[in-house]
Length: 95
Length: 485
Image (cartoon, rainbow over all chains, first blue to last red):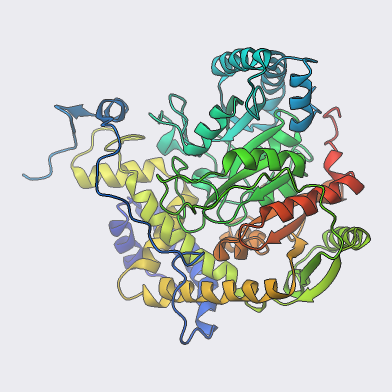
């Protein structure tokens, strides 16, 4: 099962990963060999089985909806590349 | 001094044979003098270590020492350490200094231990050879031209080279057990949910578990006592009392039923490895255990299932690395798209990018059911194999790896060849069961690991079985050539 160049480009867009043209061929080959591996799953008889979402079949634990952590904005933003007025700065999104 | 186990160090500290400052200085010097050969440590925390050792010595003098007081430990560079760079083996986090401690790190601080530094690892824990780290490959102290295993290759190599008596590590598909096997040490992956993942950089959230590495099972029990805790900050952490893993190490193995999966002894298993494992199983019979042949028929599906589930979960977990709040950011981004795409292309290595793309593919519209949905169903099949087996046996044993440490580059350009290294370890993660590896022999002067898989939350029994084996064999006492022991 081989992956086409267009598929790689679509995946790169979904994953927000720049993939330059020279690498597409190599990536396509490697991804195809992994997909060949995972295609072995199709032969398994899984009729009637639900997916194992949690290895111990636990359900998501909930807690009271109250604030129980201190605000650590200063500590967290101290390591950010670019901030201003308590906000994270990114290049302009809207023209 | 570096040949003392953690157990012996604690004894020596209590009896004032040496101080924490002395042992810490000893290990720091060893790392500085010897680690250029192995490349096992990314960040050495010398000042903090000496400060912690000094505090530990004060507590020891007052007779108020917590359990691991004064013991030097290395931590895999995947655990967030407040104020100390945590890179996860990646350029993406080369400049990341966390503003908080992982729960595991907090537990170790509370126990009075001394952090020596952060160990090298495959990038974002994706690998079985420690060849993908941004900081360069780790060398196996047993054979410098060979891999130490991965992703916890740094922790394993450091212990084998006696650069530290113990270390933390993580295991998603075998990343504690496989490097433990290839480096001739003991390592344990607990039951899913036993150890808090808060502050442990996520790779695959339904598979990751942190665990201890040391030279002996007795030491791993001490480390696991510290690492295991209920933590409400990790909602997948199971609320269940932590037994004292050291208390049952000397239980008799009389009547212990050990399952030997026939699928773990088929083609692809190195003959020398098989012999070492079978010889070890004979030792267990002498200790009173009964060997029972079992079948885990869906073993062959475990690698394909893992290579859908793990990359899929990784693609979601790694989407947080976007150059906005921390970590690498590309220079002069033109717009937000460019910021994301170039930051991620520059920050992530090739294997990580491939896994993100595979994961994205398996989760994308039109493919989700056929890949991710199917793999999760297959995961049920794998789990059911184990549940059935544990009705007849108490523990399962077999080889940890198909062969001893391979040479750098040996798995070449075929990612699947590398993935098959994990064939015996991966099912354990898929089922959420605990697994460990201990040294059980040598092939061509390279260590072989025996894997023990336990039932859910049965780490105490596994450590007991491993400890009893280590009382009648000396594989765990061997040191690589050139490392004095």
